[in-house]
Image 1 (cartoon, one colour):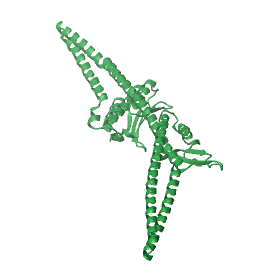
Image 2 (cartoon, rainbow, N blue to C red):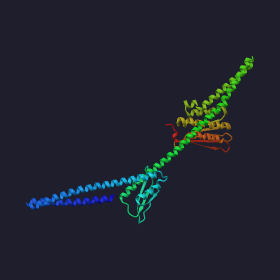
Image 3 (tube, one colour):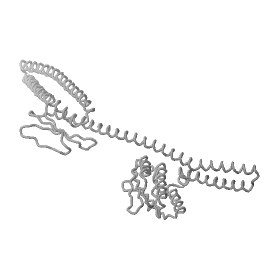
Image 4 (cartoon, rainbow, N blue to C red):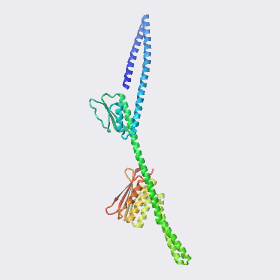
Length: 399
């Protein structure tokens, strides 16, 4: 279509030039007649000039109208092509292999053999075939190249249409890739949400069990002791009542300590008021004093973590250390928090406690790490002891 239009414009220009030459010649004749005083020659020149001018004007009007009709025809053809291309790409939207479907559409549109090449791959055409290669690019990166071959040559109009098809295909490829990534992220988000709900339920269940087995049982025992003390007072056994009430007071103080420890473990005041490193240091100092353990601690890098991440990572460290104490207690403990080269965070918790960790306890720690989009791995030492490694992504850093 474009080639024919160009040839038509060239022919129109040639004809208009010929008429202009005729008009110019007639005008020269008229001027010569006026100069020589030849009336007949002047009249013939003027008549020819007027006739040539009228013919040229009529020709220009007709050719301009034809040019507009040709342009309208070309625009209509291009609009039909784009509509068919949009319809074709709509079918590609539901296909799993966009590049393969693009070849099918190209063969249909251009009546040519189509092949999708790998990025930067180029094939030389054979002497008997005509070929064009149109790269497909997404975000400035080549994802493939559409190679079309057929017996007759490709004109400029074919190249333009093939380029449009390649652009549509690249956009659809990118959209399909983004949609697939969005679907994966949605599945991952749903999985993490389920994990978070499960972790919250497990944590509530653990707190309920801990309260029932410790504080509630202790308070029940205190109530029985106080009841016995009142009975002893009623019956006049003052010395026995004094002893019973003293035991109740001792158990009451122990229960207050248990509840204070439980509150501290849920959200340590030092973590909220002083920061991550002092909270971990207070935890390890308490273990060192109670169990005579040597502790190696370096947790200053954790101060760069987001507040919620600090709280969750603190719970992982606390639970890992408590598990080591229950197995041992160990002689040495080490807690190292550092920022990795890629901007993420790595927390290493190592102990030399005898025995092996229960798989369920490790799964619980891994579940906590997954709620932070992190990964937890562990290594069992040959002579006992365990190393727990928690790796967090770079976006765990506080903004």
